[in-house]
Amino acid sequence: MDQSTNRPMHRPITRRALAKLCVAAIPAAMSLPAAVANVAISQPAPDFSLPARGGKALSLAQYRGQVVMLNFWATWCGPCRQEMPLLDAMYKKYKGLGFTLIGVNVEPDSDAAEAFLKKVPVSFPIAFDRDSQISKLYNVQGMPSSVIIDRKGKARIVHKGYKPGDENKYLDHIRALVRE
Amino acid sequence: MRILSLTAFLLINASLAGCAPIEPWVKPYEREKLADPIMAMERDPVSTSYIDHVFELREGARGGMGSAGGGCGCN
Image (tube, chains in turn green, brown):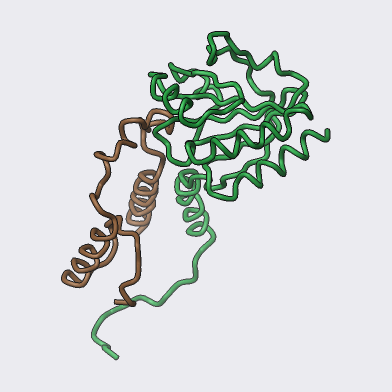
């Protein structure tokens, strides 16, 4: 080994140095994003009123007592388009048990949504959030996002994104909440 | 020595804070124009991953490119 370099002896890590390391790790830990797709929460779902398809306005309060699934979607989002027929099937199946699905379209211009709905008709109510107020209110973190609200008006499940197979997860949550 | 460790501590803290979420962040519901096919980074993902792989071998450095789509055989 090279004997000419004057290297100091290794000192053990002192407690002060360890504390400094831990403090330095705080900004790293805070910047890590939560990568979970399905989150269970229990927060009161904020009420809102939006223009709906067919002309009438739609508000969340009118569905109090039913399990409501808010699905934030857009025509430019592939997975949203993919899950629409599946959501329609889900709505038809559980409508009689007190379940409602509200599709909140987040596009500023509703023409694309209307054209899509002519090609892929759905039977659940569609609301138009043209100025993104409700998306901000619900802190939408991904497209599509689904918020499942229980009969008492509390948001219980937030599901971000859609992969084939997620409709089964939706069904599990809905079945659990419909039984409450 | 103490000043050196203090400087190092401050530098690490500042560089790690660079991993914080970028502001202003384009909200997921505002990404209509970004979702347009013309805004895609590559025209064809398969051929892009192939040529990215060729660049990786030429430069002797990997990563930093968004190539997805494997099947080149561990090289």
